[in-house]
Image 1 (cartoon, rainbow, N blue to C red):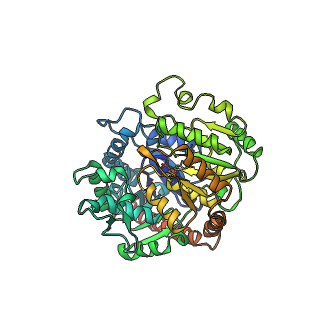
Image 2: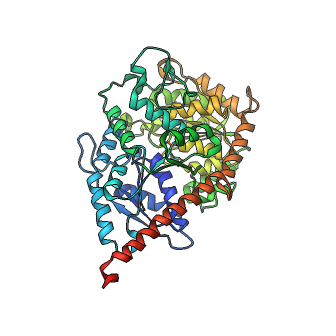
Image 3: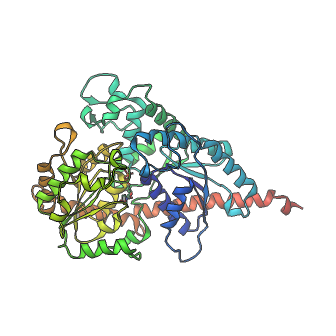
Length: 488
Ligand code: UDP
């Protein structure tokens, strides 16, 4: 099978983990991506106990107006170019189809031949390519069914443009899900029917309708009614396989992979903190806080008196200034909080931090991978959504599952320092809602039960592997029957 993912870490990481899960279970996979992303993913490849039928294939992004050269992931890109990266990725379709054709004809071994493809919510064109090749396509949703259905429906129909009511009615989402205008992101509120993002999402949603089925990074027990709605409304099979985490993290209580030097020092630092006493602060791989927000957050963390690990990404407008991330923090911040505060600049070992017993809360932008990683480790979330479907993820976790609390924004959309202090204390000291920690720990058990033998996600993995193995075997058999060397 052939897998292609949207070029951003929140999609690439779970798509690659899914690929590894399948390869470990004997499915042959070609992971197609751009060269820089392939190198980054390959460097995270754990050493397998037995050889895997896994290989990478590279496609090169075509030059695209508004996309700087050598930019292949949102992780390294200035947000003002994000849309251009998605549009440039869509231009890969002819190259992708050329690759499928050449693999079908020239593959050295049977296992390399494409028997089906997996794309995702922002690469609906992959389903079109599968149709042209006459092979089945599948869609991997890196977000939960709830967030994805609502996000797609909002961008496809822009229902809030049709009237001025506060309640927003979504044409293709379950009727029991309601949204208010205040739930919508600024970009949705500003969108029109000619917005490039509306047109892009519409193309992907419509092309994704050709999928044979949906593979979703969620677990059945998290959103049973929505999975049921998705199956009945689309008439397609939905395989819930989450939480999609690296093998080590699934059943065990902590990471067992060897630590590299940076990770070891973070672990040592965490070892010195009391259990459940540290708030981990990260806004994912592609979001930046404004300079004003960085200062408020710093004062809030300092004022809370609590221990913290803060993954600080420098806003792009300052990235070329010398010592910029230092100068964005209040004078003496790192000195004054040394011992109880750790600022990480660059890529943090998030799963390792969330898995450490000293971590007690997560201030998160509510990217789905972060949320699923956090609840799988039993860590309550302080929601600070910034873009995309993050506002929907936050709403579901706060209002329905009640395993998260909201950091409230003040003037100009900034979360003030007093609010940071309040919300950190509420969660770390278990103030206010005394059952919050109990509920999230219960959810962690449910998540773990879903992926271990006999669990809902484990059963879906089995069913998927059977399905893919069947496609592989039947393709190999038909190749053998029709190959000239067999016939002569
Ligand atoms: N991540 C990480 N270290 C970082 C930042 C992010 O390991 O410093 C990982 C995180 O664990 C998650 C992914 O990158 O798996 C981010 O995905 P998410 O959906 O949370 O947010 P996005 O970055 O897509 O907004």
